[in-house]
Image (cartoon, rainbow over all chains, first blue to last red; front, side, top):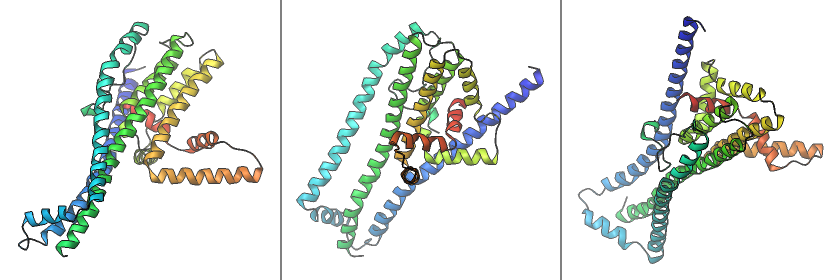
Length: 134
Length: 191
């Protein structure tokens, strides 16, 4: 390969990496817009409604009314939902700790068989590296 | 809006916020599940090579393992939106490097002597594509609709021809007609 074609290959590679990065940014922006945009709409509705009561009711009035309107079945449903989410999140934490504890040994053993063994590049607990998030 | 109406609106909003939270936790779960499937596949590939079927330094093995590593690392970026963006970007400004990895890998596979090893490596690659498409289908209502419509079409054609067709064959046919899978693979390796 001549130095000129090497240079042009390098240029192509850089362009390709740039294009890939650009897709990363566009994709991440669309996902962030969907994620945070939907939350912003919910917040807008709630806080927009709350603004109408400025000067009419105190925050304590609104909070008391919120809880006062709750019936037992609704309260139980909220506890059930929040409990389920909390349980799931705790299980996820536990799974990540397990991955961290158990993944190292097979990695070492595989390295004995294949010295060139490549890695996925994830963190020790199996999560995405912060620099890969964008 | 009266205070009572507002309270009702908030009680309506709380479950919606809850669904929003679960939706994003679910998305993280799906990424972890995809990584798990790919880790298992990479393990199978390693065991296959460790059994002496293909040398660890063979480009056909190395390249496939690199592709799996790339997919595991960037699994959080695999989505229907990303697939569509990749196809559009490739149409608007194609790069000779797009799909190059796949072509090089196919060449390395073709140079293998044993047909059984060739078939097995192609199967590993196919399984990786299936895992990716399943991940995209379960995360995108648009892609799920496309799959349902495609299945109905294939089912109708099979019915007319009087042939039986299984779900696996329908899914494989869907993947083979889906553009851009090799583009995603190439992007994961470009990082």
